[in-house]
Amino acid sequence: MLIILLGPPGAGKGTQAESIVKDYSLVYISTGDILRAAVKEDKELGRKAKHYMDQGSLVPDELVVEIVKDRLKDPDCQNGALFDGFPRTVEQAKFLDEALPEIGSMVDGVLLIEVDEDELIERLTGRRVCSKCNAVYHLKFNPPEVRNVCDQCGGDLYQRDDDSIETVKERLEVYKKQTGPLISFYKDKNVLYPVDGNEDISSVYKKIKAVLDKL
Ligand code: AP5
Ligand code: MG
Image (spheres, rainbow, N blue to C red):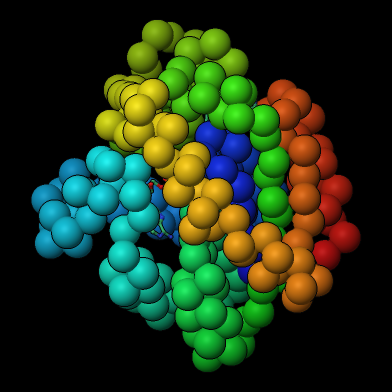
């Protein structure tokens, strides 16, 4: 099964992905996580991408497509994958359409998680992420048991550089302009499944599960 998580920054893609990959045994591919790891490790990819990420802009398609091309070559992708934050432009979606037949796969479903803008801003500015395993928390909505410590691996939690209010606003605009067109792109292919993401984490997951169990 190959699933794409689509939705604005803060919609809960990474949060819901944690449960989906466990229940459906899918390989998790988050271009955002891969890029942040490259920045942290000071790799060439990270040095090229950092400036765009800090501004809240998209990293150029060529760089992102290379990441995904490399990842899809890994044998574990043969059994399906969960994409989070990719594709992000129509160009990236077209690349994926060309690359998937090579590994005998196709897009089974695109879950569009929809959340009101005020809620997105509150979620992003209160988010904390584990520096070791990337688990996602929220100071108010999903706090860890011990302050600033990951429940799953004991790693330290940090605030993402792009979660400042100014950068969040820019990311929301970039989503509308550059990623918004993917909604009709996948609707036309009859693989788009909108999910109301405004409710609490477990209620949203129930709706996602209802969709995935029918695919
Ligand atoms: P990326 O890492 O993909 O970030 P994003 O798309 O902006 O999405 P987020 O990770 O911010 O939100 P999310 O939906 O995962 O929400 P989360 O579950 O964390 O990309 C970062 C940057 O990398 C981009 O700006 C770009 O520069 C670059 N990039 C990445 N991919 C690219 C690509 N393909 N092309 C070009 N550039 C690319 O939840 C948010 C918060 O809300 C958390 O605190 C969580 O605990 C809380 N929460 C979640 N669900 C709920 C709920 N139901 N109720 C209450 N709180 C909730
Ligand atoms: Mg995320």
